Structures are given as C-alpha cells and as structure tokens.
Length: 144
Image (cartoon, rainbow, N blue to C red):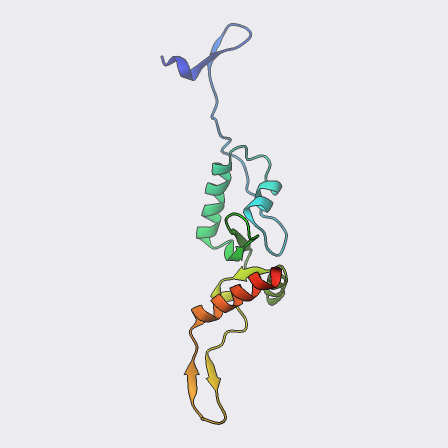
C-alpha cells in the first residue's frame, strides 16, 4: 500500500482519501453582457483551484457557448480577455466600446472596406488591421 494515499480517522480505521478536486462542480457564466476571467472567478467561488476553472472555461470556449470579443487594457499589466455569450448583440458591442474594450475585427460594426473619392472616381481598399490599430491607438490616447 502506498502510505501517501492513506489517512487515519479519529477512530483508528484506515481509509483512502477522496479526490483533490470535486468533479461535480458546475461552471456558472456571469449574467453580464461581457465579462473577464476575474468576473468568472467571482461568480464561481466553489472552484478552489484556478486551473480547474480555466480548464472548464476553455471547454466552453471551444464548444462555442462563450465567445472572446476583445481585450481590456488597463495600461498596466497584461491585457485581459473579454468574453460574451452568443448571440452577440449590437448593444453588447456598443457597451463594450463605451468601456474602452478593444474589440476583435469581426465585432467592429464600422468596418471600412472601400473609400470612394468623388474627384478621382476611384476606389481604394483599406487594410482592416490598420483600421484596428488606429482604433486601439484612439482608445489609448483618449484614456489619458
């Protein structure tokens, strides 16, 4: 017998220990329009280990029950991912913009694809990555 897997009870009987992590925990998604991992931890205090919560949440992301909509940059430390439950409504996107969240390009409602010039009568394609960078710079500079 392995001594590490055995504990004695107060009555002197020897019994095996239970599992370290409770496998019957249910992940609760916050009811907000969008949330971060800190909000997820606050709603699920029964998850004693952060890695268990992250693993369960990753399964929800992979199944499509939760979507990553952007990042929240507090100008100090790493940017935090922001999540929402589909369907992602335009009101969710607008409230995320108001909270200075840098949205992924698929959620930007004002994508610029063609610019028409009346004097030259030509069309110029605009790179969406530059548009996203300019949007992110405007958010950072407006925060100061």
